[in-house]
Image (cartoon, rainbow over all chains, first blue to last red; front, side, top):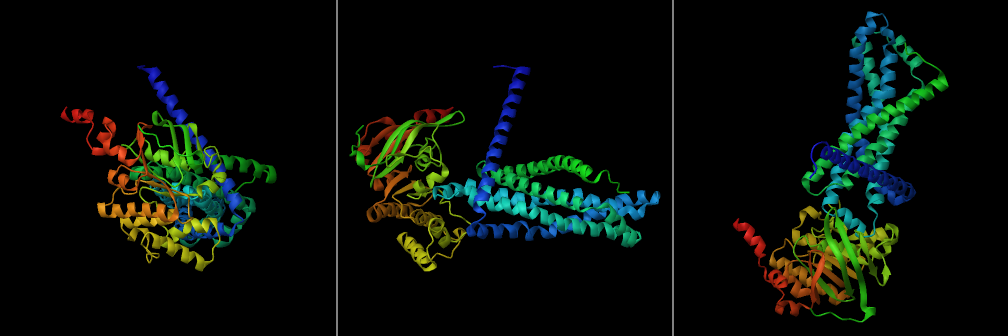
Length: 276
Length: 262
């Protein structure tokens, strides 16, 4: 038996290889899910499967999204206002709070809340179906579980994360306005004027565009983790944890890359814009 | 070991040299097996000898690492999932724990395969579901959820679902496991009834010898992924093969007993 650095290295290699294998499986799974969704989307039966998922992902998540959005806007304002006041720029609070909410915090927080609320539930549901052989039962009856189970769930996440992001944006800006204007006495007119100058349609759209990616990522990751869940209650529990952690990381990593790309595009189109 | 000869055109399913490994564990090891139309073949063997894995290969829920699977003389193990749909519609699969969809009622479970593959009108569907449930003696439970019925009833509902598309072959994965002897016998009677009335070819995986003797036309014994015995039920009652005797009579392996004394 090898020992010392050689053994450590081989363990490291084995671990890396396993992760690369997993990632490869995930890519195939994602590809099949996308193809499955595209092939199904025209069928009325798909819409019958999609609607309950939309209800679960969209309607049921709305309160959580509205509340987190509001608090994020409020916290942002609380942290910033004293600094802005010190340099006499408190009327420009609206620009900073709203641009942050619309570009970053709205989509990211909506994505993360959905990863926790919906992702966990999706993984647990599919994981339990896997463990109790219900997924095998579907296949044995000639029904493709990717098209029947995964496609409606992923499509629901993909379509509704952007819409929920808009709601988070709305309550986020109301929260920021409440703290700045109502509570700390910033003048309402200039607050919104500077907001209008700073926040362009492009910012709003870039946030929504990100949300499409986040929705697809969290839907695919959560379904994948459930689909390849290990047996037993422990397997399902572990799959749920992994699904949330992986979705969380994927959302933040995607956010970074999309922010870089969108920033470049924004500068190409509008040139450099100052918020202040 | 007596061979079970039959004319070639009666062969419904054939496995040729099927091997399957999970990681370093070899579950099936070059298995050759032919299954005859209209017969009930029982596969016995200790837990972990690859019985359920064998069953899953027949409908290609698992694909062999090497070897081939034939259904009606046509190779099926390399078909795509889409191509397998037509093959799978001719099979019914009774899973060990029933695998009923718990988000649906009993009636919806039985209707599920029918709705997926045909467009029956409501009345026709209702009648077919009732007829399938009547077959397993559970008509009237349509609106219950799977959580509200007993373990034995769940298996019978799962059986009704398995036969919903009038399959040629029904695969039973440990159909009597976890049931008391009386309920287990109801399942045995159902297996015999399906064979008698619907001329279903059955493959039963079990370690319940009472059930095996009752339903089998032929018993195949697996050990470590290989077939170690193959013959009619009577042969097992008189066989002198020590491995067969130990399993059939339910005696522990001497090595396992020795390990207990340590």
